[in-house]
Length: 412
Image 1 (cartoon, rainbow, N blue to C red):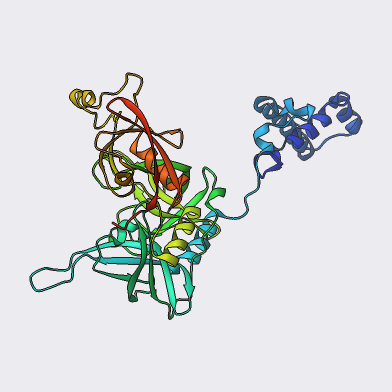
Image 2 (cartoon, one colour; image 1 turned 180 degrees about the vertical axis):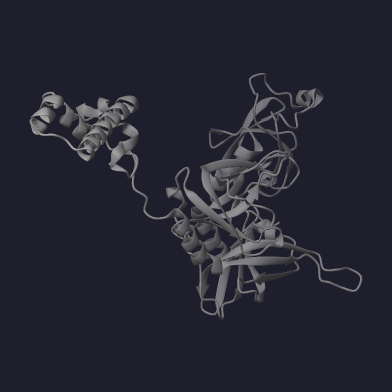
């Protein structure tokens, strides 16, 4: 077959019909067939119609280049076409039906309602991902439940239940809640986000703008995007969030909801969107493989244990918050030192090791540290609690080294 279902567009048709007209002159064969016989009007009409059809096919083949395929060559794009595994719209319906009962709306009551202060609430989404004994557990974003005095969830059937915070992590923006598991019959299955492909169809399910049980669809625009974030909301980027980029509509309230593939598996937790004027189709979700590890530790320990150094710092070469000229002079650095981290305050392990104000950290265990972001990523990804850490730094222009024993990061 060719590009279309009609055999008329098949390259095989072109070759077959070409072979028919490449034999000895057709006019002689026709004359032999009807020599010595008179033709009726109907026969003449039929023959004329047949000849016209043959000529039309030949002309069409020449125009569309079909005759060029007599050598057997087939365009590469035809060879690469793979048959669909099913109606994609039907698959969206089935995937949504599979996950939808496991997606809940989350109500974050910021303050207890009194006569003088009305209830101040925020809305978000969550995904029931497992059930153990008489409890069901829900994954959501940390920023959805931040500052809550009371948490409630609303199931897809409209039932409201009290929720308890099991654990939350500000760095990964993941939190786990628990609810009474009675009557909870559906849990979402977490998929393998490492197998996502560009252009893959995904659906987002959540509670945007309080419009619970909402479904949107789109594609995977990027499988592993690094987005800079400010953990302290001070305008300084001090962490990078690894996310899936999608053009499925994600709005306020979608946070914590499910990003689902067409197999009905949750491959991401919706977390943010770019809301600048003129920006459309830039939504982000935390990959399921990362979510599952964080959620498991939160459900077991209630927190994520990370290494702690104890320095408050500013980047030596920060284009957003550059140091003033007099501040640079006060550091008295050699001209060769262009990047590093300036210590503003030292507490905990850093203070015990002797680090002070205006020390400029340039290396951890011999690896370059050029920003607060790289400092934090090295601590969280490359070290464990109790590890010795060799710090190279400059004080009054002199390079020094000190070994720090890392402790567990205290809860904020």
